[in-house]
Length: 379
Image (cartoon, rainbow, N blue to C red; front, side):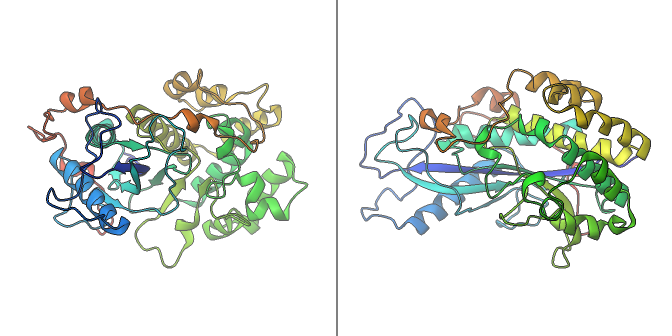
């Protein structure tokens, strides 16, 4: 029996706080905004306040029953709260913002989870807890990052080759899943634009690309990783560097970075299902299946859309979910991302918390998950 793939998510967002003496700009929102001691009158330094915010998130996730370590530590076996200084506050005119708010960057990292459906419910509860217990916004500079692994085995050469070929051949279609400002963001650059292969082969065609992918020069995972690493930016939209990094002993994963930040659990789960589905197809496909699929890469996005691709890959649920949410495949204008000027706070999801037996006090009344959902990278 094939062992399920493993995955983990990184949720990036900004958290609002304010002083106890300030009026509440959003009194109907259940999320807390006060993190200082009740007897504290002085202005709290950002670093101290941010630490309190992170601690409060850790406590909230723990109370909701998610697997948390006794101490906040990133061991990939428990949920972890940390910082990301690349995260900016919301747009100054956005409805979620207020002059009395101070915004703090935060990143929540899941454990490495096997991919049965029960694992995805941890994502739903984490997103619902954060968006209900706090005032948060996934701002323009945030991303949703999903790591996919093959357990303790690591990915085979054929899986990595098949996946890179799939991602390269249908990158225009995949880009329509995201708003244009994510198509040229330095932390998620397209493979066709900013990978080493793209820079070294500016006149590539699908035929020459396929010839290269099946040649001896790309006959190892390391050779593939080095050819498709980022060139001028900070990261590519899909990162393979963890597969060939001597400093990385644990996180042997492929990282999907293109999705904009979100705390909508349904969106997060569907993207996890999508990228795991892509990797699963790459793991199982033989070279003839890959070549048959790549015949459609010549058609372009106008004749062969992302929904057509997802259906052909055996992902009809994902095709149905995304079909009404596609974005134009255009170069991002200078004012791209205008939707963040009307951004509201992430929607509270008390309905999700109630579904999993989490009360109004944020405390779980039952155990929802078993330990065997978590992949132990140290075994």
